[in-house]
Image (cartoon, rainbow, N blue to C red; front, side, top):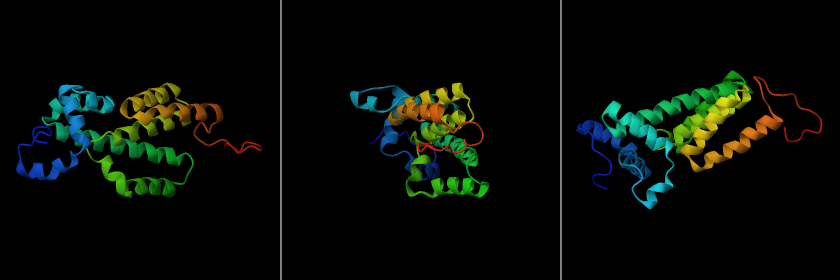
Length: 182
């Protein structure tokens, strides 16, 4: 809709960047600019619009700020995913894990003005911190993940399972007899 997604001051940038701000992106951009404005807007969790609202004055445009936020979170999330995979897999398998995530068809949402890349960063950060027994950081990432997406609350289950049953530390626990849940 007109006026929802602010245009860029360059025709070339409008053509290149505004396709990343469609569908639900318009909701996040309006929430970042005006706060929660209707009952329907409360369906969107607050962390991404808050970060978007903080970055918009720095970059002068909400779409550009959203794209930079999403791509920055994606790079951080992919780095953490690689490091997390290295705890259990070889270097080539860890690289392949990252490549498969980036090449997956629906990964285009990781590059758009959506909270998916932020959620990837926070969930991967929570699991990686838990595996390295940094529980305060794991809890912080898990809490922020719950503020980014509704399914972030399920990180409590994942973190509790890692805390209770492992694997923890920098290498996985050896398999024990009778430990089918490992």
